[in-house]
Figure 1 (cartoon, rainbow, N blue to C red):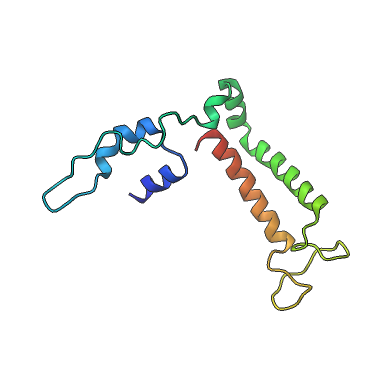
Figure 2: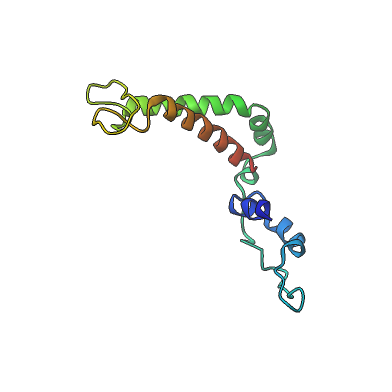
Length: 132
């Protein structure tokens, strides 16, 4: 049941699929199953995912080369971060702050952790774009 709510929250299930599978997730009362409207799990009938906007050839190309696209996205994001130099990662002289807590020259978000976050987020962005 947690997978269902996770899927609804992140848009993995289309509204049509939710309508067909709504019987599996109906709440129960003491008398028995409640009668639930067929459209109760229809989140948005006009919902259009990002993958349906693009042509099938583009979606196929992105799904074929999704790792390479995620790497390119990561490199662009890392370059933007390195150019922007946020103060939580860099000190005033432009050097990386060391990891630590309690000193004004240390940070809880060092460059190695920020790099891992960017890599994971770039891959998840490609997966989200493809619709799951």
